[in-house]
Each structure stands twice: as structure tokens, then as C-alpha cells.
Amino acid sequence: MSVRLPILYIVIPCYNEQEVLPITTPKFLNKLDELIKIEMISSKSRILFVNDGSSDDTWNIILNYAKENPRILGICQSRNRGHQNAVLAGLMEAKDSADITISIDCDGQDDINAMNSMIEQYKKGAEIVYGVRSRRDTDTFFKKFTAESFYRLLNWMGAEVVFNHADYRLVSSRVLQEFANFKEVNIFLRGMFPLVGFKSTAVYYERNERIAGKSHYPLKKMLALAFDGITSLSIKPIRLITGLGTLIAVGSFILAIWAVIMHFLGNTVPGWASSTSLICFMGGIQLISLGIIGEYIGKIYLETKHRPRYIISDRTDNFKNGDCL
Ligand code: UDP
Ligand code: MG
Image (cartoon, rainbow, N blue to C red; front, side, top):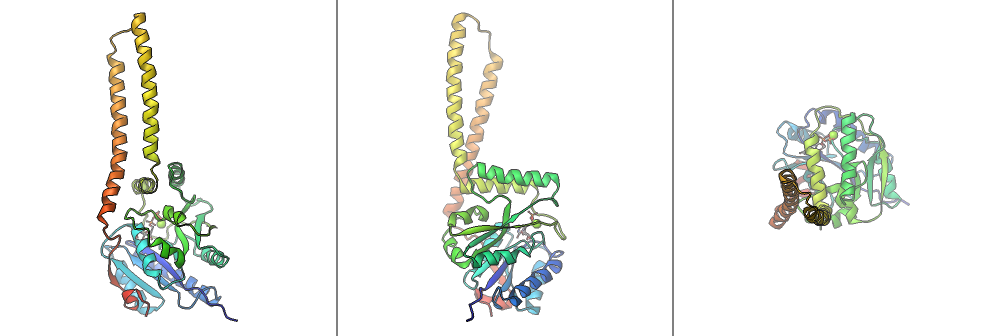
């Protein structure tokens, strides 16, 4: 009896990756061919590149690959929208043609061999399989420290994310159909998939160094992503402000009683320094709090616009209208 093999779409976001693509594309293709050959996946499986508005030759390279190889498809975003939106565009495009998708960066950092175990886990019933880095030996101390603090901060702030999991993950089309109902424009995929639910598991792999080109996630962008992740997924910062406010109010009350007692004991001196520092402290706290609240209001503002999260401006000939020819 022959079982129907799942159709896999490997979704790969690319932003200015002209140096990397010629090195990693043959590897992705070999992996796809191998998986087809060992009958883990259907021969209708594809690689789907998402060009995220690159300013270099990336899109032309993808167009050429698609001409040479029918297993390579490509879509092009109308402009650079960021990694998360590029992955989202790819997943949404793939969800009706594929049974499973695996999103992976195009720079060769994630071990493609982990795909075998991901698909095995899918066959055992998992609908989402998170690729988790088992170690970070190849990262510098600074990158390792900042990245790990990033996950701790996210979890502490109430954004539920899988530790050391980036965006290398298998997701079934069933989950993607449900995920399509998450209409928010502020997206942080790795924190959103756990919210969809379904049976999930993790596969461990070792992350390598970037093969060529340079990272698009320096510290500044990573901090922005962490902040975005927290404010998109959790209202814990607002609760913390309430807690902090209460704490300071109680502290101030005790201080006021103390000041009155001191006054009656005749121990008071003209307190310019202490009042100034108190005013500064309170001003600071209030400004930070206002800023955080403003951040949420900003998000609400963006959400109410209902703008499209991605716009596809171009497709490879073999992937017109989202249907694979
Ligand atoms: N990327 C993207 N749009 C962007 C920035 C990055 O599609 O605006 C892609 C990039 O081509 C790569 C992946 O996202 O495939 C991860 O980026 P990068 O390797 O620079 O990040 P890092 O691995 O250093 O965190
Ligand atoms: Mg990378």
C-alpha cells in the first residue's frame, strides 16, 4: 500500500544575499532531492525563495534558478519589509500548495540536516517542530550573551518563546490555515506559533557561522526585535508599571510620615538636594512609563489601519498566482 507523501515547501527569506545564494542554493536543492529520493516527501516539493526587496542582484539570481530548475520557485516583495514579513509572505503563499513548510534562513547558518528529524517528528504527529540550537560555540561571546539575554528577557516579560529557537521551523499547512486568522500587522512569528497551539516538539541542531555576506541583525536590530516581541505579545510591561507605581506610592507615603516626624523632632535642614532628586526620579519614571504606554498605543494605531503585511510585486514564471505550474 502506498502512503501519500507530504509536499514540503522550504521557505527561504533573502535580503541582499547575492553572495550567499550561489553557495547555499545547491545545498538546499540537494537536501530536497535527497528527501524526495528516500521517500520522506513528495516529488511535488519545492524551494520557495522570498526576495525581501533586495537592492542587489538577489532577485535576478532567483529568476535564473527558477528557469533552470522547476523545483525552485520565487516571489518578490514590493519593498524591504523585514525578515518576519518575508517569512510570513512565503508561508502564506505556500500554505495552499504544501502539506508542510520549513522556514530557514538562506545564509547556511541553520543545519539543513535537521530537516530529516523535523519531518520524522511531523510523521509522528507534531504539527509544529521548532529548530532549537543546541550550542552556540561559533558565536562570539558578545553575540551569545546578547542572544541568550534576549530569550530570557522575552520570557520574563511574558512573551512565550521557545529558548534558542529562531525561525527555523516546520509548520504544517493545517496550522498555517489557522495562523492565517491572526491578522495583526505587528508580527513576531516565533512567539505567535505557540499561541496557535497544536501538537509541537523541538529538534536540536548546531548553528554554523554565516557562509558569506554579513548579518542583518546587529545589536540595535536585535534589541528592536526583542522590544517588538514583548510589546506585540504581552501586556506585562504595563502591569510592571502599575506594580512599580504602587511600590513608589507606598515608599513615598512612608517617606512623608518620616519627614513629618523629623519636622516635629526639629531635625530638618533645607532639603534642596533631596527634593530635587525626588522630582527627577519621579519625572524619569513617569517618562519611561509614558513611553511604554505610548508604544502600545502606537501598536494599536498600526493595527487599526489594517494595512497589508506584505505585497508581492513579482513571481517566477513557474509560480504565477501562487499555483505551481
Ligand atoms: N532577511 C530578510 N529581510 C531583512 C533582513 C534579513 O529577509 O530585512 C533575511 C536574510 O536574508 C536571512 C534571514 O533573514 O535569510 C536572517 O538574516 P541574518 O542572517 O542577517 O540574521 P542573523 O542570522 O544574523 O540573526
Ligand atoms: Mg544569519
